Image: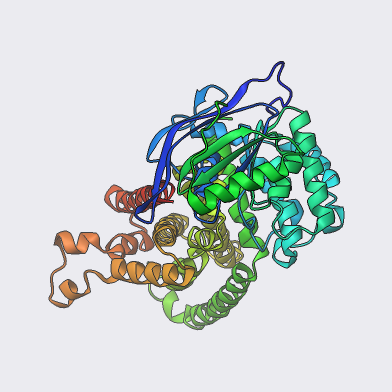
Length: 254
Length: 256
């Protein structure tokens, strides 16, 4: 299992000039950014800005057309197997196998990530307890509510204690209590050294948990900088300026 | 254990679990085994009724020729329907419900996904074959079985099921919907079986067109004749189908 607490903040992820075309148009263009362990990056942008494409490439589900991705200092495109232990990914709408139970999902994800036997059982029990999935453990994924599906997807992403957690609109379909629990979980992951990328439409979500924000517009990075919990108004102003006028605020170095 | 083996095993276990919790596999197993058991009793009844006449023919057909091999022949016919139904969701189902990227994101290469899925389906099909073989084998102590002929026929059926499963998984990899995958697998399997029908009707019994047909390679095995050419044909078909499936799945990751 990948140790989650590094000795000092290290660069977990580095994107360099990442580009990808989708449906005949550039979805992401020359995207460069870096993420340190323990950092929580909020990825903002209007629909079609390239957030999900970016996250899919980072998660290893989609190959970029050009550019490079470095994961803990290694070339991720050369070694896609790095995803197995280093990355936990919750895609939008948490895709699940309807005919498998919650326990079976966690077992399947654990095995795909190289966990087996006692280690898998321990990891499964821990994540079920942490995400309060005990009452659902034997229930089939096909009968779960959208919020429960989202929690199961999150459990699958966290099961193997990844160094990088990639969350694509994780608060979708969560009620306010569950959304608050998610925020607490992200902070907890960050405190143990896990780097988190969080794509969301909710600016409040970003100001509540992120310590950095990146704004994408038409596939390009228009803003990248630190954020504080009392920066909500400034973030809102920047976001709307970029979303409405595509104004390019000079990006700060990561 | 090597990473490749662990990956393939994890995918195979996942697919196996999905197969056994879905009603489709159980319904197919129950219906086909009931049909085969009924036919077994009919074949056995015919064999017993003709026993006295055959006693006068030394070296005439025995239990293996009249009961065991025809039963396996019926399983081969059923396989044309059963295998496409079992394999249709192998990849197309994942593509449809969006779970395919989860496998890519777990760092599992396309070849391991294809192989894992294939092995799970093949496991189910071999269990199906073993349960069918158990019917004639249950009478092994009461009759004289031609073990060599039965082993050759079982090998032929194993290779046929392996080839059909590979074609089914490949079809599922290319199709966007499981039903299309099932239809494509059925059409390809039937085409492979009967590609030489026209040639045979014209009285041509050799040549490339006959070599291409699955029937040309299965029938000698069912008669107890094992040749390297026939084995190679099945191995080539399995290899080609799985290679095409891997290539298609790999391009899925490229194209998104």
